[in-house]
Length: 147
Image (tube, rainbow, N blue to C red; front, side, top):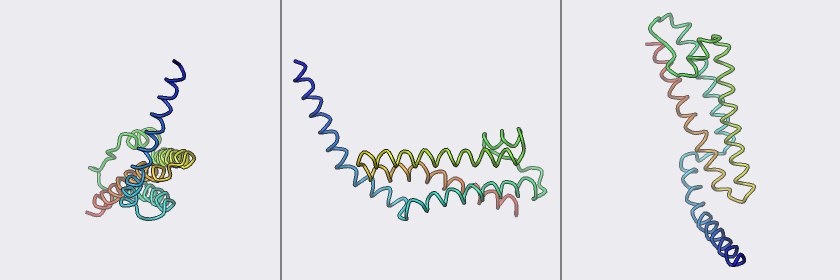
């Protein structure tokens, strides 16, 4: 009785692995479409975008001389209210470090179990939205500062 259940479970796991392996190339192709360059460049983009976001936020709030500009992000607004721009910098760097560590860990675990396509996709899916949103925030801060 127990032997039959165990055999059936093994067959189901093998079928699931085969199904996952067959879809892995499609997932990897989608991640390559979204980010066709090397993965370390995405990490670099995230770091540069975070630094530019911080710099332009400082410029918009402190250097522009406009009183009607405010920080719209909840976490950034809290950090500015709590400890100013120093706290904002630390919170931004902690958020970027945490997100990057999560992406690297997910990629590493997928690679360890032989799912390299899923690993790349997890890496791209975790980091690319942050990079895009940070770039949009930079553009918004520049527009608010200079217009």
